[in-house]
Image (cartoon, rainbow, N blue to C red; front, side, top):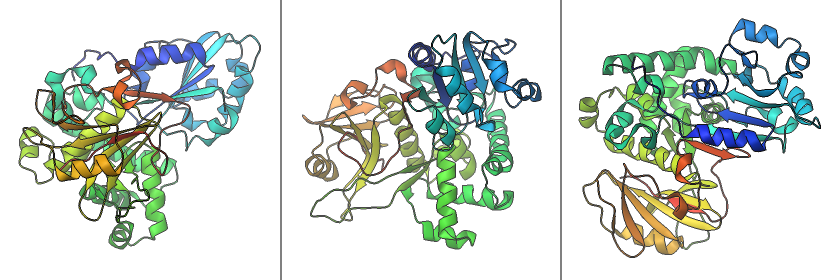
Length: 415
C-alpha cells in the first residue's frame, strides 16, 4: 500500500467550520478518509479523541456528559452513528455560555439517518460531506487511475491493481455483512449481494422498481426502502428528474448510479483499465464518474437530470441561487452542438451549458455551450457553487438531495 498522505482540500473547510459552529459533522461513506482527516486536527492518542468502534472509546463515553464537559479545544467523536444518544448531550454542551470545546463528529451515515442530530442540534451543527479522492487532490495525471479504481483512498493508493481489487472486494463484503444490518437490512447477505449486482446492471439507467422487485421476489416498498438506505449510506445516488410545465412528455422516474466508480467496476468485473476499455458499460461508467466529480466540485443546492420521451436529455441540471446550469457528459474526442443540447437550453432556460469530455482543451461550442475537459475543475462560480478549494467536500446545513424544486444550476447527461 502506498504510504504517502494525499492532502485533502476539505481540511481547510473543516477548520473554518469549527471556528463558526459549535458542532461540525463530517459525513461520508466508510473508508473515504474521514478519520485520517480528523487525526490531522486531533491525534488518535489524545484524550480529546473518541473512536466508537474501539471498546475503550465506547467505555470512556459510558457517562458521556461527565467525560466531555471538561474538555477544551477540538473534540473528535468517530463513528458517531453508533451512539445517536450523544446528540442531546452535545446540545447541552454547545449551549454553554462559554464554550471551551468544539465538537467534530464523524459518521458513515447521512443526516437523514442521524435524525437525533437534526432534532437536537438544529442551528448548532454544520454538515460537511466528504467524498473519496477528487482529481484536484491527486492531479490530472492520475485521472484514469482514479476513474478505474475509484476514490476510496485504500483502493486508489494500492500498490497494484490486484491489491486494489482485493480491497474493494473486502469493502463490499463488509458493507453487506456488517454495515447494512446495522441499519436494519434483514434480507440476508446473499440477497443483498444480488441486489448490489442488479443495481450495477442498472447503473446510468432509469430506475425500474417493479423489475427489481420481481427479480428479487420482494415487495416494491422493500426495494424502495433499501434504495433509500443505500443512498443514505453514500453507496448509491438516485438522481431525481426535473420536470416542469412544458408541452412535452418528460421522464418522471429517477436514474440510479453507484457513486464510487471503483466499486461499480468491481461489481461488473472490470477492475482494470484494459478490462474497462473492452467492457460494453464503459460509457455508463464514464457518465457516472463525471456526474459525481461535477457534483463534488460545484456543490449545487439541488441537482437533477432532465429527459423527454422524444429523446432530448440533460445528464445534470445544477441549481443554485436562481441559476440553472446544464452539464452534458460525452465520451467523444470533440463534442459538437446537438439538437438535444438546443432543446435543453431553450426549454429549461439554462444560464449556460457545459459538455464534459475526456479531451485536454476547453473551447466554446457556441455562445452558450462550452466543452470542458474532465481533468479541469468545474467552474464553480458559474454554477453558483463554492470556490475551488471545496473540491471533494460539500458544506451545508443539511445534505443536498434531489427532487422537485426551483431553478438552479443544471448538469447534463453522458452518452
